[in-house]
Amino acid sequence: MAKELLGKVLVRRIRKELAEELFGIKKDLILAGIITETEAYFGEDDPASVLATRGRKFGRLMHEEPGITFIYMVHANWLLNIVAHPAGEAGAVLIRSIKPISGVAYMKRLRGTNNDKNLTNGPGKLTKALYITKELNGIPVYRKDRLWICDGPAPERIYTSRRIGVRRDLNRDLRFYILI
DNA sequence: AGGAAGATCTACT
DNA sequence: GTAGATCTTCCTA
Image (cartoon, rainbow, N blue to C red; front, side, top):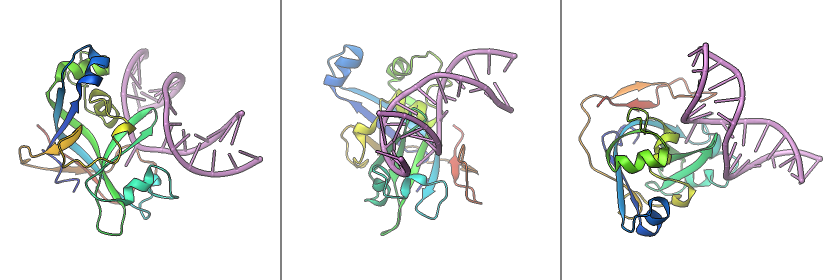
């Protein structure tokens, strides 16, 4: 699933009420980007998936139906995951990076930067650029509402590596990325 | 009520 | 390359 999501388009619709509050603009806004980096997290057997264990409030979502969002806070950053696992198990895919394709000017305002290169190239950066918070937890990403994923260009080549920044990783490449 | 942890980011060298 | 800021959730008392 982590590999499948590469090249797909992550779309965020900011409804006019929120758009007015954030930007003083009274119309719906569309922000979007191509997913370029993901990581896979398993359930209880994955030492990096601390959130899947001990019945944590938000970690519980990792056990629920595949295709919904799973959003939580780490180090003052909201991180966006898509729940994905076989029936009866737990797991999620962390979205680590996107390449902006629509609404770049608004993303810059939300991030407080003019730098194109560092706008959405990190899990905490992209949630800030798209105004993704726990408010969007548990919503299906196959419905066009406030946050969804649709088809994009099929990647030519997928690269892999170990997961970034985890204290105890599995002995296996679970980070996937494309170069575009 | 208080403290620790954490799948991060920024600014600095 | 790394120190320090950051903030929500969960654990303990």
